[in-house]
Image (tube, rainbow, N blue to C red; front, side, top):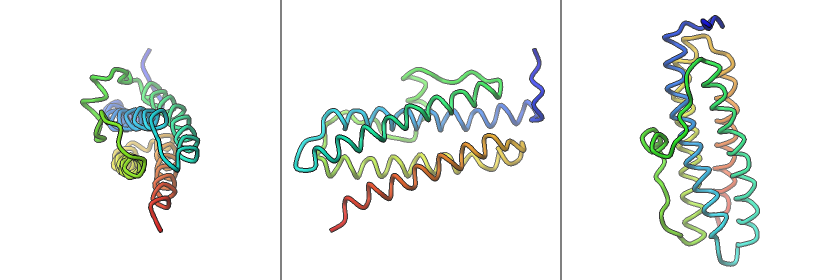
Length: 156
């Protein structure tokens, strides 16, 4: 059945392409955060272990919301490691860095996701896609706040 939600098909497809990049970045950051949760060691173990769990749990919810928005726009959401690898701006983590480096890598990851979300605004605004704009605003706020909180652990 034809989709008639007030957003032209061309705009829906372009918005979904951007959201697919956001989904890939979010999923890659989810995986990295979960990896660090499992493998963190050192004097900040308890704090970071709990914090990382909070973060990856939030990201698990976020990837679902992003994928469902892509589907609501009438496009299939990417869902494989290969697709995510092709779409993401976040470097995969294949080592177990020290806790301080984990924090630095997660700051960079959250900042990257915020930038990816911000980059989708022009096409979402052009398509008058308020639902996507709202989702992007929420994601940016969350990732900027999380980056700030992680960055604060590096001070002093």
